[in-house]
Length: 249
Image (cartoon, rainbow, N blue to C red; front, side, top):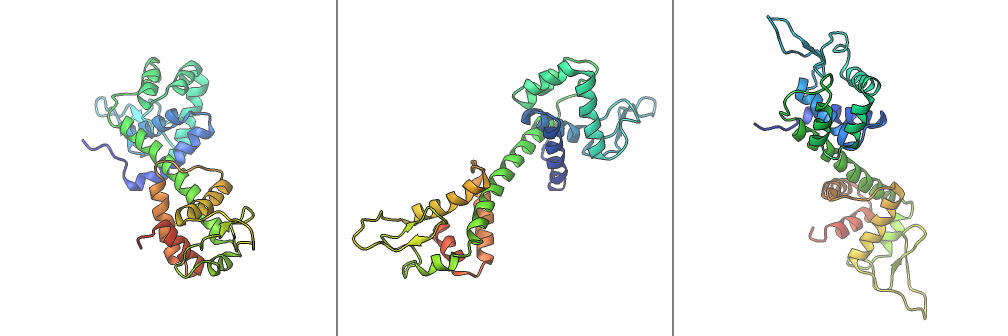
């Protein structure tokens, strides 16, 4: 069976994940809780389950045993579930928060018969997908913030005008540490050589530093988004930066 969160579920999964984090959950615990919510109800706040003699015994987003706790919006039910777990089973919550993987969080919760979840199902796969989507978003947002900062530089046309006929920095030009503006070599001074790759990393690095994030292995997605944005820009510098990021184009 394919345990994959549909694209339509991703916005709510991210919202619930951030809610869990804000309430003190560790990343592994937060991802597990979101994955469990989808496993239990498919994010349906009005879901009914575990029928006995034709009557439901499990209710709502987390399939709890109380109709009142299993009512309201998905966000409200998720928040109430975490709050009650923290209040009524602090030792279980602490053990879940100390676990390193969704599987370990599940095992920690299973030790408490009043709070244990059902079969694993797809909750681990969902949890890992939620976790990966958060990593992707962080790296992509950091990359895009860095690119946007450079593109908004009021001196971007000046940067482009100081490039060589090939559209790349001329030998002897270098990246100024105060704003990323290539300056012409001074007479009689020895200047470091600049390559397209080093110039690109210098420019992008300043933007990423201002964003306060580091790109992860999922940076390829951010690069694709950056390229798409650059292609929509008409300024000379946008074309210049695009050529640095993707010389083959």
